Every structure is written in structure tokens, then in C-alpha cells.
Length: 261
Ligand SMILES: Cc1cc2nc3c(=O)[nH]c(=O)nc-3n(C[C@H](O)[C@H](O)[C@H](O)COP(=O)(O)OP(=O)(O)OC[C@H]3O[C@@H](n4cnc5c(N)ncnc54)[C@H](O)[C@@H]3O)c2cc1C
Image (cartoon, rainbow, N blue to C red; front, top):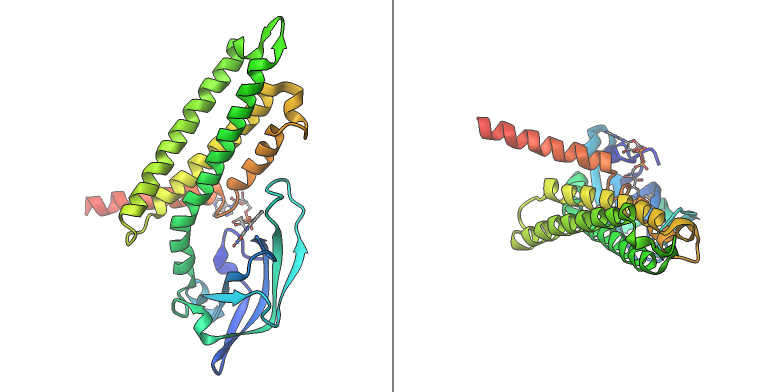
């Protein structure tokens, strides 16, 4: 729980004993916890080394000492369970170490390079769905004797939604194609850019989609309020958007510095 944006602050530990590691600690907020059979987890194998002491492990559901805590009650993505993972003297074979000891952060960071575009795709789908639902409603909802889609104030919302969604799609597909073409390269900056842009697009579009629908947009009977609740998490998980901005700027500054020398 202590480690969030700063994943290196983890208090969870792994101790090598013979040919097994003994895992102890708690991981809050695990997506698809309890439902998944296999878990990629991070423990400190050497707390003195800080970030360089973190190692990645595979843990299978059902391993003695590995249990599930609280199921979170969430604002959105309620179809995906989020659980606390608990490790109490959980023994895993040495071969469950993923990569090398102390290389956990590299495992996490290189996974983010390919998983962040996945969150971007989730966000893009949410934005597209919200726009389609609200546009369909605005065409049939009549006020002042005409469809609300005939009011320029509403039309401009759709113009902005459509443009932002196309820009998000173009960025995401471009980055995905680049990743496919060169899997050996690190794509940290680009994957952070698509996660940031697509999730901010989803949040903006879904808020506007609710607004374009008026009161019905706020009701659970109608799908756009769900899109709005589901959009929020895409700005938070797989690294918050503040962290994405930090990473993008870090890489831009590093690239600029390397061009000068
Ligand atoms: C539904 C859900 C599912 C999740 N699933 C998983 C999962 O499967 N696996 C997993 O590992 N994690 C998962 N997480 C955790 C998620 O990745 C973290 O919640 C997220 O990284 C933020 O960490 P935090 O919640 O501790 O916020 P904090 O780190 O406490 O951040 C609080 C605020 O401070 C800001 N902040 C922090 N540091 C900086 C900084 N250096 N610069 C600028 N701003 C900063 C943050 O952006 C945020 O706005 C999940 C979270 C949720 C809510």
C-alpha cells in the first residue's frame, strides 16, 4: 500500500531459502484479482538496494500463503474485480523469478511500454461508445420543436468529440504500428503519450456526452453515465497521467541533451 506512483517504495519482501523464495507483503488494487490464475508480482529481494533491489515473480493462484483480501467497491469498471493480494510466507520455486534478481523495475517498465497502449485502446473505445450513444440520442430528442442535434452548441460538442477521437486513434495506431515493427526498442515516451492523450480524450468526451444528453445522460438507465465513470480509471492506472507527463518530459529532455553532444 505504501508504494503507488513510487513503486520502488514497496515494503513487500522476497527471501531466498534453498531453492524457494519466501514472499511476504500486501499488494492493494490488483486488476482482475481472484479471477486470474497467474499473477505477476513485485517484491524487494534486497531492501538496501532500493529500486535495484526489486524483483518480479510469477505466483499461481492456490499457492499456499497467497490469499485475497478485500474486493474493492469502485466508481467504474465494475465488471473487472479489483482485489488486495496477500502473501504470508508464500513459498514459490526459484524458477518463478521473472528476469534476474533486482531486475524487477525493468520488467515493470518494459511491460508498461506495451500495456499502456492497451489502456489507451480501452479509453478510445469508451470515448467512441459515449459519442455514438449521445449522438444517436441528440438526433431523436426534440426540444423547442427541433432535434437537440440541430442546436449549434450541441453540434460543436460533437465536432470536438469526433476530432479529438480521430486524433487519439491516429496517435494510438501509429504507436502500435511502430511497436509491432520494432519490438526490441523501448517505446516508453510514445506509449506514455498514447495513454495520456487517449485517456484525457475519454474523460473529456464522456463528460460532454452526458451533457449533450441532458438529464437522461445522468441516469443509470442510459449508458453514457457508465462511460463517464469507466473513463476515469484510464487516467489513473498503469501510471497516473501526471506520471505519464513526467516520463514524456524526461525522455524529451534526454533526447534533446543527446542531440546537442
Ligand atoms: C481500479 C484500479 C485497478 C488497479 N490495478 C492495478 C494492477 O492490476 N496492478 C498494479 O500494480 N496497480 C494497479 N492499480 C494501482 C494504480 O496503478 C495506482 O493507483 C496508480 O499508479 C497511482 O498510485 P496511487 O493510487 O498510490 O496514487 P499516489 O501515488 O498516492 O498519487 C496521488 C496523486 O499524486 C500524484 N503524484 C504522485 N507522484 C507524483 C509525481 N512524482 N509527480 C506528479 N504527481 C504525482 C498522482 O498522479 C496522483 O494524482 C490499480 C488502481 C485502481 C484504482
